[in-house]
Amino acid sequence: MKKAILFSALSLMAFTACEKEFSAMEDQSAPKIELLLPHLLEATAGDSLHFEVRISDNDQLHDWYLGLNNLSKMTKEIHWSQHSHSQSVVLDTSYYLDPNLSDSHFQLQLEASDHNGNKSSRKIALFVKAKG
Image 1 (cartoon, rainbow, N blue to C red):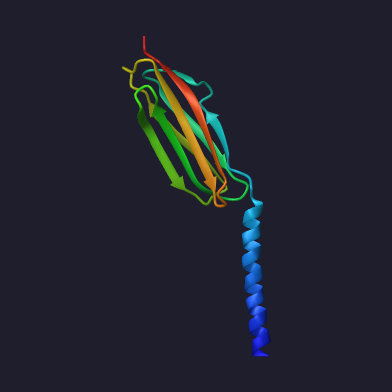
Image 2 (image 1 turned 180 degrees about the horizontal axis):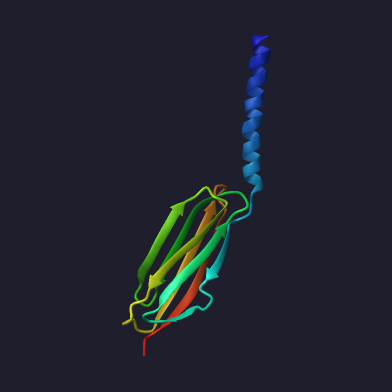
């Protein structure tokens, strides 16, 4: 009798482990990255850039990253990343542009992954005009 109960318990554990493994294999959808703001991808030195981004997944997010790079100077202006278990997050941040900035090319870099290893990324070009 003990052998039958032990066999049943082991079979149930193996089935449960396989079920979780197969459910992870079913999720092939990468997270969705949606730029809510800014609507215009041009700015003037001295302006404040306001970024609002929604990142969502059909199951559960794992990590996300928001970076703002000044490609003209080869500098990283914003580096923001976080681990998440949410299904959706809204990132809301601002960056003040130096009023003495010359014409510059910036890039907003967005990345996200879910707990099943699906990844998505998006790069958005921004142009900043010198003041005056």
